[in-house]
Amino acid sequence: MPKISDLDKNWQELMFLCNKEEEYVRDATHPKLLAHIRRQIEKLAADMGFTPEQIKSRQFRAERDGQHITRILTDD
Image (cartoon, rainbow, N blue to C red; front, side, top):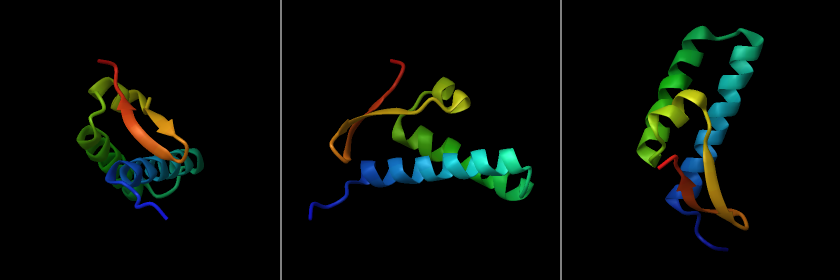
C-alpha cells in the first residue's frame, strides 16, 4: 500500500475542518470551537499555498491522480 503524502494528509484535514465548520455554522452550535476551527483552516490553507482570497471564500481546489492529490490549484 503506497504511503500517504503530506499533501494528501493536509488536504484530508482541510476538508474535514471545512465540513466541521459548515456543520457548526448550520447548527449554530459550539461558537468557541467554531472560532478555533476557522483559525485552523486559515493557517493550514495558508501553509498549503492557498491565496488569501481563496481562504476567505473557502474556494479550495486541487488536482488529483486517482486517490492522491498531485497539486494545489491557486489563483496565480
